[in-house]
Image 1 (tube, one colour):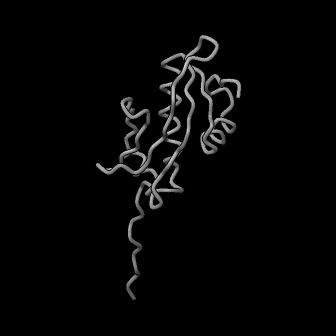
Image 2 (cartoon, rainbow, N blue to C red; image 1 turned 180 degrees about the horizontal axis):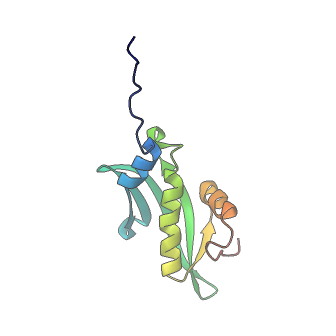
Length: 116
């Protein structure tokens, strides 16, 4: 009797591969961060900038991931790209967008928040 062999399992999950091939791009001309996967635009995070109380403040207006890419952690990847930008600019963050607000609430202290 021959023993059936199981096919080798991939060493990485599909989600891990998506994160590796995704790229967050800051499109300053359109006031947004874009998420690209294999050359396709799959999500955006729109923001506005202003000076409040003498300090640059970035207000996140919306975060959108196209349906077929939701649930893979890519929205968080977009927000992390924005957080890096906010830190680099020594700015404060004002999360108007509910997704970004939940991310910041789950990661307290990751960035200075503006008064709402």
